Length: 158
Image 1 (cartoon, rainbow, N blue to C red):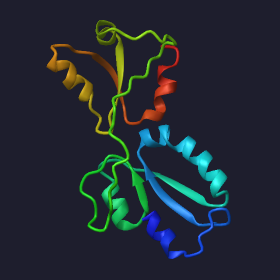
Image 2 (image 1 turned 90 degrees about the horizontal axis):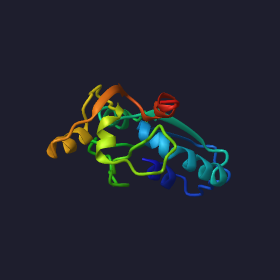
Image 3 (image 1 turned 30 degrees about the vertical axis):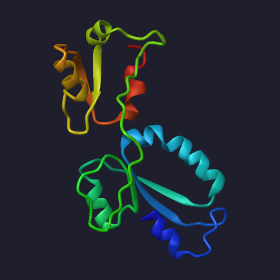
């Protein structure tokens, strides 16, 4: 892990280190966390190299076990025996809107609009659809994509 690698270098100085760290990030983490993380890392460790690899729920155990990444941030399933897991956050559903309004959507407006679903497993139904079904409602998913980073371009002008 990243902490193990750092503990092996007794005199680790982030301002002078030229180490390379291989990290795995899921698309949502890369989209939301990587920009501010990189700004902080560039300030504190300007010479360190970070290699980011896409990971997801299915790939992360194999990438950790093979050593292709030393740390990963994503939803996880069964991990290698020597892997350590730390909960960073509970996932809260997020809604991205194509319009610039800051007026909250009503449930009727939400259900009436066409939806894009981010699904790493190529589904057209997700948690939101399960929650809506529990209250007898339904939304209309018109597109399913595998990554969050495509959303701004896909939603622009809609």
